[in-house]
Length: 582
Image (cartoon, rainbow, N blue to C red):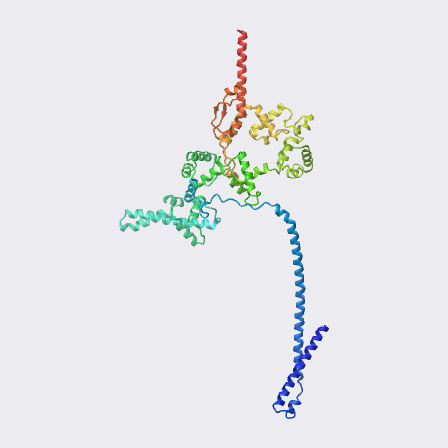
């Protein structure tokens, strides 16, 4: 405050000195012009006006207050600036420390891979596309013919209603013109009014399906799209045609396909070699579009669409692809990996195989420490296998569940002396089956059917699914075991693999009701491969022509060889007995 007052006094003093200096200059100028103070006494005696001095002082004080306020704001801004500079310095120091800490990780990180040129570009001209092969040409023709394109925005109820109204008006217009022109050709000019009335009467009371068949399933879809756009719904002619034919047409059946429909669809698609779907759609009893038939076949009936076995070449290609991507999930994910694997592999299939064979999980035999950990974890967590797997490093939930259910569970029927030691042997040490258990097994077969071994565990406590299956093969009631093996071979040979990734209602709708028992498998005999036994060259083996399906016929071929050996022994014994008697 003292400094401000001093500034005010200095400024006031300077202002007064300026005023007096100006007055003296005016006095000197008057003297030079010949006028002294005596000649102008009014000017000499005129005092200084007090109001002027007061206004000048007020102006000076206002300027001082403004200067003080400016100085205060300047100091506040300097304080904020110094504070911001200090924060920037601290942030820069922290950034340098973080960069130093991440430097070793950046040096060890995999380098960014540069992928090869796309398979779908011409190396001679990057802007051009390669010529289409035969399959691409056929697919393009099919899409253009049936209006199959990528999904667009969904159709609303108002849009569907407007489409039906516009289409009916267009059908009435086209049908009226067609009938009227046919009548006018054979009528006289005076009868044109009557032809007009007759044509109008025929078309007014006709239904949509009748009009559609009258026009041979064709109409001006461009006109339909234009009239639909007038109502505020912009759609292309192809989109209108595809939406009406596949979803709104009253004659086409869009319900689920029955078992008989699937069987007939398989037969017709085999006859047409999987291409002429118009002929396939015409052969079905219920009217369906060609696209519906094609989609049903690909999703639920095509057994050559997916591969089930993994070869060493597939494993090598998967590992190479994973290394090219620099770690799955970082660049293209499993969809990109499955695309590089070629046809017959889905992203879910590739992911499951990689997780099953990855070195992250231990797929080898269980050690004593792992068994002990599993036993303690089950006592604490119960049968919550996700929680149990957290206490057994290197084993996932499925491995823990299978180990406990099939090997380590105390509820299994095993000899008491071998209960602890049987965990470390691969031999299935089990108690012999009692007659009561055999009766329960036969009753479960009638209740659940062959193959549902897990469900049979409810009626056979203490027995694993593998034990139940082996006992079923050994008992072979009414040759059910042989029939079951043939059905497994038929399923492998004919039945399709699961091609849908959805669950719930949609999956149940897409899955076919066909089973292996609905097909007849052709078996033929083939000479057995030569081995050390002489009988193996004599007894022919049954085969389907597919090595993957023949795996399920090994037990039947083994039984055939054993029966032949027994018959041969009996024949030799009869011959020896006759020689002794003779």
